[in-house]
Amino acid sequence: MILKIILTAVIFIQFFPSFVFAEDPKIRIELERETRKKVSIAIPEFVLEETYEDPAGLGKESLEILKNDLKLSEQFDLIDPSVFKETALLERKRKTVDYNSWNEMGAQWLLKTDYKINPLDKSFNVTFRLYETATERFLLGKRYTSTKKFLRRIIHRFADEVVLQLTGKRGIAGTKIAFLSADNGSKEIYTIDFDGHGLRKITNENSIILTPAWSPDGGWIVYTSYAARNPDLVMISATGQKRRTLLKLPGLNAAPAWSPNGQRIAMVLSKDRNSEIYVLEKNFGLKRLTRHFNIDTSPTWSPEGTQIAFTSDRSGTGAPQIYIMDVETGDKGGVKRLSFGSGYNDDPSWSPDGDKIAYTARVGKKFQIKVYDLKTKKSKQFTFGPGSSEQPAWSPDGRFIVYRHRENGKLQIVAKSVDGGKARQLTFAEGGGYSPAWSPYSKR
Image (cartoon, rainbow, N blue to C red; front, side, top):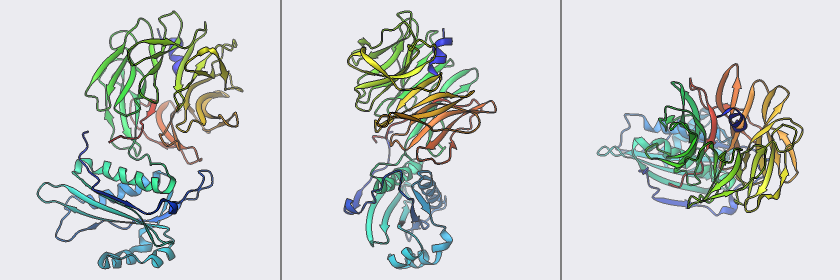
């Protein structure tokens, strides 16, 4: 956690949606997150168009990716293929939709897919069609063209469209999680897809790295690096191809947090012989927000960019707590304490909807994630069970929280739905997993 560190620190994408068609949005199922039931969906095998071949089995691979994406979204119940095997085979030949049959089998939604593989350039062309059986309506269709290299991204993109059709918010199958992992005595930044695939090493600092944070457009990751023998502020492209030092003032240049509009970075500097929160402006000017003799750290922006939540032990008890301050006035305009009932609270993370703040809290002898509701002004414990859970970060749709979990001496990255689903381990790296940061939605 940042406070601990301070106390001890001295594509170009080659697929193109060629058409989009959707039914009237009034038919979209709009239910509150807390009460929404999962939608049962049938996904038959992808149909390979006649005269084309698929020796690599891309159709089967794509089907499994899609089914897994929808399962992980925790919005759908996938109907067992054995239930609709005969119906799917008949419709494969007739090119029709027997709504009554699908509805009787319990399928509220039906997803049918045709594809072909160009033998000349090996391009992959796939057409998705989504239907609602009860109303006998066509909901959504998409067609994509890609190479095998971007196959997973195509499927993730469409899975997110299906979730959007159901919930009004894009899914997160196409997002990534950045995290730190030990690598030959150093710590480096890696990224991984939400489904656990696509592990990629981003940095080669051969040094200590702290607290990666994504830019709002998903193109850059900013972090603290000790590569130059000082904790400097550095940013690197999400592909790892471009690196730039942003700030290297004496002492800490740490705990960066990008503003929602991408124009400013809140961070912690110790150039004043104490850890204070500053904002680095686009013109590289610095604006000081806190002026207190105790430690202030771990800034996180509200979605509107008007407030910052942070950690401070300014309460005088020697115990860090979570506070909120206005960005324009800083702590001169007053601060509001959020956390109570625990002697140690850190790592605040503001939700994308702006109504909640997740943070790390000491519960007994362990650390757990709690979530503060800004409307009810109450905190609820989010993680339970053995081990310690720390360093929460929200998914861009606000439906999941990713965090670091320590158990039996091992540290890995875990994701869990705010609706109370089961925790799912994302990383299995030998070097462990630290400081997760969830990417925004892809702009590409």
